[in-house]
Image (tube, rainbow, N blue to C red; front, side, top):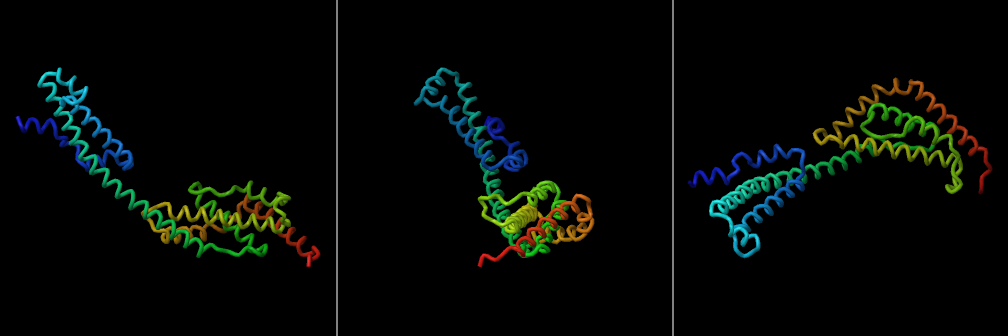
Length: 249
């Protein structure tokens, strides 16, 4: 009888490993919710076998076999809960380790991007270099990140500086270039830290090879040529106006 009861009350087919496999795409928080539900369910079933509650008084009207069935069911739920709890703890440790690694990857990616892609933006040539980097990065990374489109890039150079900005056209354009470089940095940092199985340094070297390989072809595309032309005309025009304006001093 004891062996038969063990077969009924021990969930031998639901080990912690099985819970981890079945719950591969569920979080530790979701497993904790299941654990709590099992605890509550087992407690409610046991309440039928105790006389200090309404459920217990109702359970007193059940047959001995029925109360034993409820006791066995509660024990079975406890057995399942035990392994869910162990799996939850393993999942929780794995999630914390993954989060820590992601933070480390993000820091390393930020440092690498800053060291490799921090460019000055004072002259027209320097500003165009940043645009060229953007155009190549946009193609190489594709849909992995978001960067402004050709249409948005052209529009940013064709708009006048808003009055509230209190900027000259050249100053406004420089702020647009700085914003573009910031967008590039964010996109690159996200890309380098995305895959936790490959270090940011490894991803950067792979990325740099792709940037170097595709640079000439990307910049020769008609839409790239047109965007570069619009930027060149706008930046040179604003720089010329600034150069001939009388000094405020």
